[in-house]
Amino acid sequence: MQITGIILAGGKSKRMGTDKAFIKLNSKTLLEHSVELLQPFCKSILISSNNPEHKFVGTKTITDKIPDCGPIGGVYSCLKESETDWNFVISVDSASVKLQFVKYLIDDFDDFDAVVPIHSKGKEPLIALYNKNCLFELRKMIQSGDFKMHNLLNSINTKWVDSQNWVEKHPKLFHNINRPEDLKR
Image 1: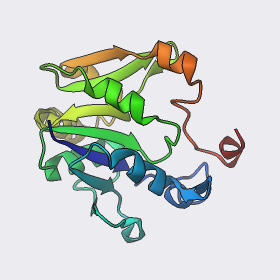
Image 2: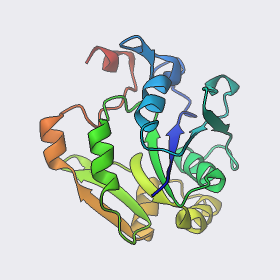
Image 3: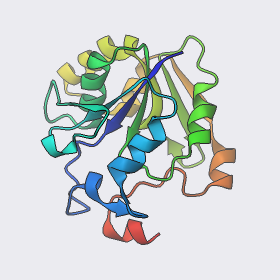
């Protein structure tokens, strides 16, 4: 099965105070971490961003087709450009996601529209697999002004993948880097 990787890097980074994609963690930018995570299993990699500086060798930058609607707009825009049915979405600030975990999600998706991790602290819609057949529902939601990914997942055929064991083994698996103090953790 071929998969396209989608990196959501178009956020405003208000809490961080600077573009998160260029923040360095262990001598690499968060964007570099994301690209390196996706390269082993993705046919192509799309970066959702309106910032022309987010270009990265071997990737394609996709600007928002419908501006100002947050991550749902980035997912929609990239799914429209994707050449594969299945797409792995990750936000650029999710630097602790492990390749083995991604393979765990990819292993079992059957006939679903989305495959999303769930654990005791919640759902992870921005570290998940989406099928292109979500496009109709995505567009409908955006046009109605509903930009919540959780609402999308409740309106499509979503497979919730229990990831509690992964969180217990890797407590930082789903930690996002949103503020300067998050880098120290």
